[in-house]
Image 1 (cartoon, rainbow, N blue to C red):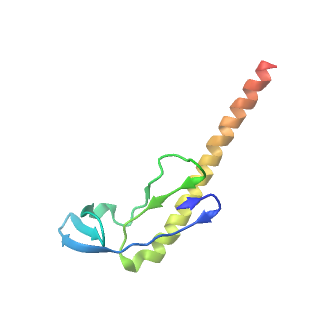
Image 2: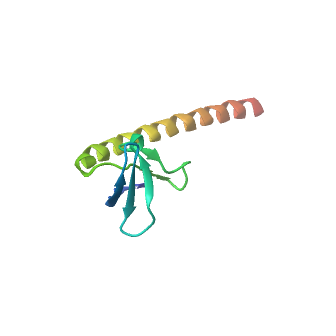
Image 3: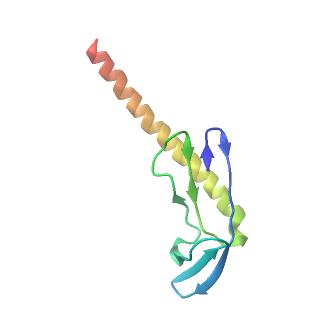
Length: 104
């Protein structure tokens, strides 16, 4: 989670209940069982659908052995997301400046 000027990385372990050729059934210490398809393992998902209150978040399910790699991927993912947002905002700002030039 990136919120304002703070970055926090939260790690929670899930217990493996069932493994099939296509998916894992996993369960956190408290909460319900989740089915995680194997192609979604080690894939970073955007949790925040939009940028609001200076907060962005993403998540990934990974094997414990790959946690350090996923942490780095998450940092890079958030940096790319911020760059995309900055570019979009600059386009918006440019459009407003053009519009204000037409109004005066």
